[in-house]
Image 1: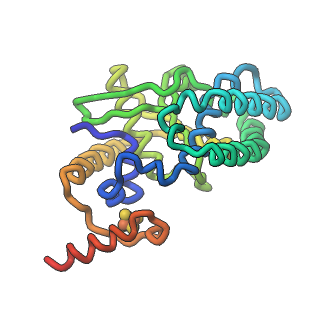
Image 2: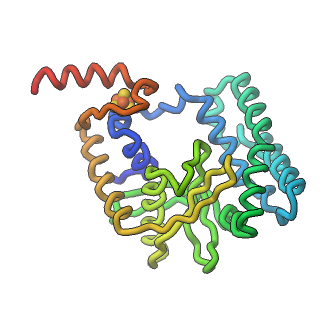
Image 3: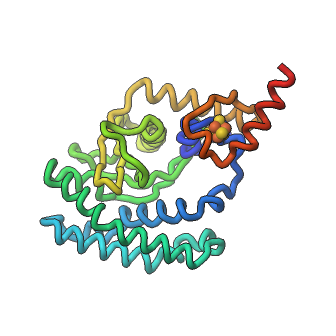
Length: 262
Ligand code: SF4
């Protein structure tokens, strides 16, 4: 049984989510899915990189052009998902994303001013949505981008559209990236050791060095996920976000049933 790299991230948020989650879980969070997908597509969009980001107004225009391009094709790309998405929800999410564009532009421009051309180089894809697979590692996944770094090496990049930490990257993002690094290394046959986590809404593509600890954790989590898929319910650990979790009722019942026998 091979494990999807995105499940590694979910495991690190909470292992029990993997136990309760169904295949269609995005349906209950269609608004979040749609917003993430829209922003992600803008970051992948060719129009965003079709000319140099010489000043803020050019960047604004390119972002708007990318938005329009994504607007025109997103339903065709995600046809199956859109069959189950209400058109009024799509309109409101589209409006929300459009209203955020100037803030996104501000974030990216601020990063460009601070670090010159590096930001653009870390965002511009050489290839998008590359499928990676390894029976030996027992992992598979589709990485958002392959980018070319300063040494002209091809490295993986993942796009995040949620909050961005003040320093570095979230642990879940780091380990997800480590799994893609390992998969890409397996495919190209050489050590890569780095990748990018791109916090798109904040204009922050962050270059991350992957170390031994990250690699060990990927393999460890992979093994634990296999156990969950064989039906083992992980121990419940109360987390700050439990009260917002969509599985909190099932999770509480399973805990009381479990504790009755032990
Ligand atoms: S309620 Fe808490 S422990 Fe249970 S699945 Fe949700 S986040 Fe995990």
